[in-house]
Length: 285
Length: 293
Image 1 (cartoon, chains in turn orange, red):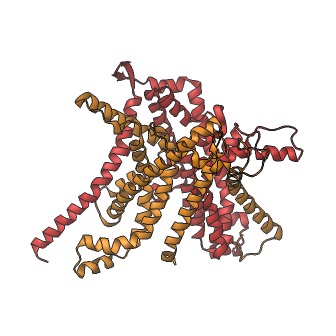
Image 2 (image 1 turned 135 degrees about the vertical axis):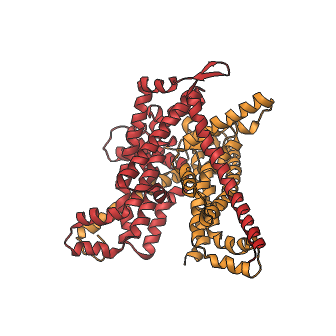
Image 3 (image 1 turned 60 degrees about the vertical axis):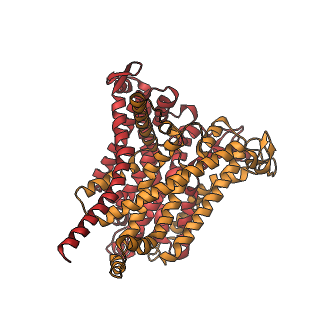
């Protein structure tokens, strides 16, 4: 069962085969997506027609490559904008939450903590529709009472960002709290004994200590926002983020330009993943 | 410390406390609690005339009297439970291998390899399965090449395809908590189990699984939630007949613009998911906060 115990050769070999098969299962869909972005055919399917870069560089329809497909490129920009806003906002609130839960004692703390975890067990679609319902109730109320039209509360990018922010904050809070829990409070006290105010001590001692967790949480938040589909689907207006744009094309059946976008996403995620590993490594050792 | 400065410190502390408390209360009340309360209210009303609403339970009775809604609901729940269990069964040996059999560099490498597919969007992963399973796809091609099929086979748009997609897409959320809890199990406990005469099965059920229970539970809860609330995978891999409950919610809200009915469906799905999570926690005697963090 474990290396220090003897086991039969058959058991070891079959166990290894199982794990091997598992990794083939994991990696095949991604390899297939990447491979077909180079297929010289109008459809991302067999037969293999030869190698081409048209789905990246092609300038004319129907062989419109990624670099000339303005609809897709615009949706990438939209996704990045939403992800940046969501990441900054959720990180700011998550840091406050971490300090609240790790440093303060107050009645109802456990209840608030459970409430804070709630977004994790609310399905994304439901989170999306509940925010949609509530925001339009508020917008309708303002319209009736004051005759002001609050455009921001109608489906659109503001609501998309709010919806993503609502659950990403919980995840960021968990990441940052875990790190803050390991912080030695005497370091902050030492800084205050040396004449720093509480805020200066936090800014110069505690926040640098939290840096790896903040970066890690930022990467996770950015990716979760960029890749979010369920909540976004319910709140999206006329401007579509990338996942929604891709979904619409997938349903219609699309050219391998979608494979090219996917390859771009894989490369982007891989860079972020490696970057975050690189940033966090020296701290772990 | 004299009295005055003590008071100043104390009031500073209180001010800091309120400044930390305000944002979280705003966040939870405006984006989580009030929206759900509002959704309950909307689900309990019916349109009488333009902008005129009255109290009604019609949206809920419609759910129980219309077999399509009811069947879709049960089907979604059952398939989510099956998908969760299958994910657990597939992921457990792999997690055990990473946590207990391997050590050092290969262990970290394999663990990271497990995570990589999940840095990529769910859409891309599902797209990969579409290319593999469709009529002109790779698996159909391979079957023909091997002579196992005479003509192209359509493997997409059925329940097995949905199941594969759901399991694939949830794998990470099972593997990570399992590896973490199994990693914290001391090898000497397993050795002791054997020394005391236990066989592999007994050691597994008496030592390893009880120790891994928090990880199993948190993995199962997250996977179940994600599966139940999934829209993308059933729609793309299951096609028109996938009959997933989130599709009903989407249809009511976006296509039919019947928000009252959609809200009722949303509440029902939320009740179902909370109920199953609660049952799972009760049956395994785990606490919610411990499992989630």
